[in-house]
Structure formats: structure tokens, C-alpha cells
Amino acid sequence: MALSKRRILVVGANGYIGSNLAQQLLNDGEDVKLTDLAEKSILNYDNYFQIDFSDSNGLKELIENIDFIYFFAGRTGNSTEGFNQADEFIVGNEVTLVNLLNIIKEQEHKPKIIFPSTRLLYKGSDQLINEKSELEPKSVYSINKLACENYLKIYGDCFGIESTVFRISLPYGSLVDQQRVSYGVMSFLVNRAQQGEELFVYGEGTQKGSLIHISDLVEILILGGLNEKATGETYNVGGPDHMAMGKVVELIANKYTVPVSKVDWPEISRRTDQGDLVFDSSKILQLTNYAYKQRFLTWLDQTKP
Image (tube, rainbow, N blue to C red; front, top):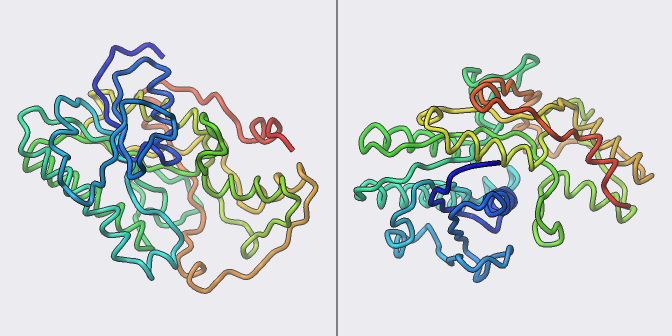
């Protein structure tokens, strides 16, 4: 990817998407600064800073002369954790962003924010979901993400802070050492299968989602996020494979020859399940003229037993 250098800060650079994005930006030769809560960068990158965005101290110096901020800081977890630790989710997801926005609004040079939102904002549907589809957040986490989207809008309207929002579906794979960074549900399933452990499907496993390889995701985040035409816009980022989770589990189980069992939904998970969330990503694909390079079955076939 040939891009002129821009001064880019990746917040949450030790997390799954953040670390993979940072790795791609470094591969592209961009001028990159990384930050997270941990003492060191998992990429062993020198231009790294340990900062807690829930405390605004040090943020002004960190963002000085930065052009773009990929804001991947945040608290994730299942629905039960969100309800039981709501204060941590609000601070980790909302307060951190507001602290950053309040620093940026005072700056003469205001960096643009590229923000990762979630598929979990949408109401489930048997139709393709586009950016104008009905919203129905059902968890503390998804409400946090919706609130953050609204913070970005009002700070943009009032203080001229530019932003682009990407609502991300189900990523898998990794560009960095997989022993150093988790990559969500796919990692959990493959790790269990590699260890010969039984896999489980909640309910009938019919809930469909869109799967995207992390290499495709970060390419889109870079091409779209750094594009002036994307400023003020929201984009779905889904992927080329639309599959039921039961089928995904079956394919992984078959590759590693492990059993699969169906289990009942935990009550709180059943109440917060969104149903089918299959994305229409044509808006971002048209903007970036991007063609997906990875497919789920190819990736799975290449994973090592």
C-alpha cells in the first residue's frame, strides 16, 4: 500500500485490532506513535507510550502534532460483565474518549479520530444490514459504542473535530504473533479445537454474521480512515463470508476432529442476542475500491493442528 507519511497515533495498540493495525501501518512506513495501558508495546516498538486515557494527564503532549488518531482503547466483555461492571465499561469506553475530545477541542491543530464501533448496535434482521438499518443495542457495551458515536458527532458539530466511524463485524486471524494477542471468538474456538477439547454451540447456532480477516479489516481501516471523503461518515465493515455460527463451529470441529455439543443459552445471553447481523459493506468498498483478499475457509485450512 503506497501512502505518503502522516503522523498517526494508535490508542489501544496492544489490543487485537489495534496491534494488527499498528503492524500494518509500520509495514507501510507510516510515521506512527503507539500507546496503551501496559508498560511495553507487544510489537516491541520504541515509539510507544504508557498512558491511561481515563486520566487526561499527559494527553495534550501525546497528541501534539498528530494528524490521525485510531482510537482502539476500550473495555470489552460479555453481556454479564457489562451489567455487573457497568462503571468500568462506562469509564473504559466513554470517559476515555470524552477526555481525548476535551483535549483536542482546545488544540489549534485538531487530529481526526478514526473510531471502531460494533455490529451489536443493529437490530437483527434476515435482510442485509446497511448503515441506515434500525438500531437496537442490547448490552452496556453496545450502548457505550452508540454513546461514543454521538460524542463524536456533537464534538464535531461544536468544535470542528473530524471523525470517521467503522462498525465492525466478526474479525479473525492475526498479522502479529498469535501467542501475544487474543483475537476473540475465533481464537477461542480454534485454540480449544487444537487442544482436542469439545466445542459448543449456543441454541441452534443459526445466528448469521459477516466474517472478515484481520488483514482485510486493517487495510480498509487505513484506506477509509485516512480518506478525506470519509470524514463525518459511518461505515459497515463486514467481509465476504456470511455464515451461521453453528456452521463456523462445525467447520472448525471437523478440521480438528473434535466433538460439538449444543447447549442452552444462558438467560442473559439469550435476552441480549441480536440474531442475524449480516452486513452490507458496499459503502466502504465503493469509497476505497477495495476487494477482499482473504476467505474464511482458506484461512481455516491453513491453520496448524
